Image (cartoon, rainbow, N blue to C red; front, side):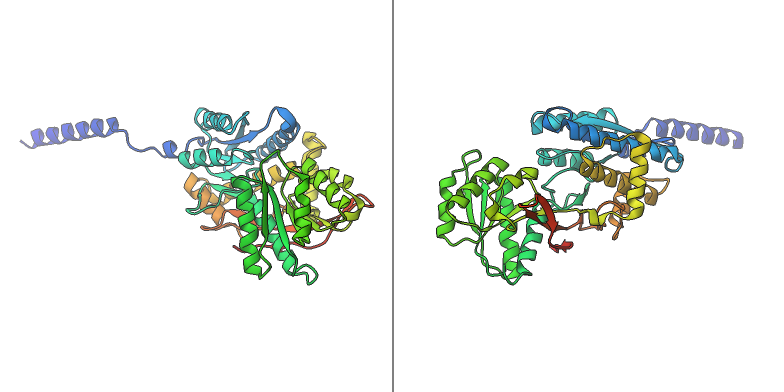
Length: 399
């Protein structure tokens, strides 16, 4: 009898093992693809054609070099980093499709420094759906609306933070504080959002409320410049393209109308030096980073990487941004430990406080904060000597 009971017990246990083996239990790898005992797969996105192709090549080169150097130094907990790239598409939807294939076909664990400008909403929806952590995407419009997107950690503030910093700069200058401000921009959701940020920050700073002057994209009419003069506007946030800006400045010069001009993001580039000399000392850029952010150690480390891997000599600002994103991601992976998961990676990133890459402003993240450095520098334009002149230190923005 005892023998029969023992046999029945063994038979039962064997059947139980067979049954449990056939059940599709949730797998850690199913929730955390792209990671194994010997490698971690990281993804990125770069423009590979059109006017941004050269920048894309520079971003790809520095990202590849940084992870290659991490591997050369032993990797992370015995794992090598493999970097996979997707290309931006001709439309936001095409970019989304390319990223979707990258995430699914290559089993990407996380992403570093992807170029998502112009496809922000599509990209964000995709990575949220697939729960892919992302560090340092290239964009001027971080998606930080409520409820907070948990997956994406931005390196720098976008246009929202830059215009808010500019308003704080204006509020701190007695000669500017009583300015009558206008915001000139193409109509549309993104630019309307920037105007709302300016209006909100003005209210907080106790400044005169800005006037909104919008126009259909591609249909800027310089004749409207006279309306600004008649309204006694003495400070203009101009959000149009470079051709529209220069035509506006030329018409204002003809009218003898010289308000201060604020250009978030420095979008005009070197062509600003073609502006009428009457605007000398009256044009200002906002920049979310500055050479002042670069430490001697950080600069030496970057130069060493550039020399060893023969990085391009152009698009250095974009390279620094991609390099900083990769460095933050690697540091977060180290902090998350050998048993890293996507959830632990996000928790590690949320623990960053005043972390310096040596080349960019220090970053701080948290459970309710996804922009590492919120603020900007103000830079004046010296039209006579054709150079940029710092006019402020770092201006922090609290939201």
